[in-house]
Length: 159
Image (tube, rainbow, N blue to C red; front, side):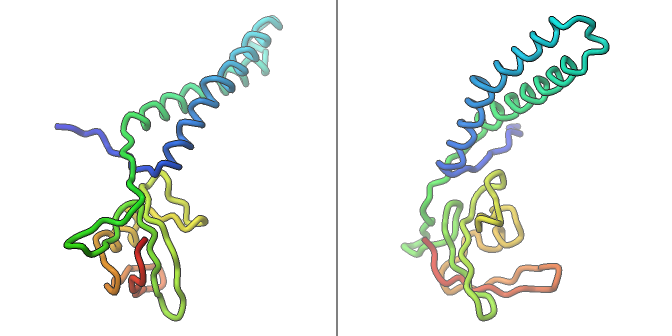
């Protein structure tokens, strides 16, 4: 059975991951290796705080590089357009959705969980709102359970 979890990313999200990986492997890691080497040359390692700090940072960087490489193997690129069912636009990964709630309108882009950023109006397809929106069309209403109670939304547009 295939237990590899898919990581859904937009082109922008994938590029950000690749940039971080490149920054860590080609710039940051070599810098920290140099710091470890310099600290090692200062003598007694058991009482050398600079050496220990550099080793800790190197360990963190190596762990993050491993994590990024594993994530990059599992990426599924999101097509940044809404899906269609019978010629009708529906909410899917990558869609930008305008919602009407109360007397206000909110615009969200549905992304994978690793790209979600509520401050940028990017919501995860795994969030309660994201799950409720998936597969919905313009004009459909949804209710989402929130800490303050149920919130009703109407899908106004899908891009």
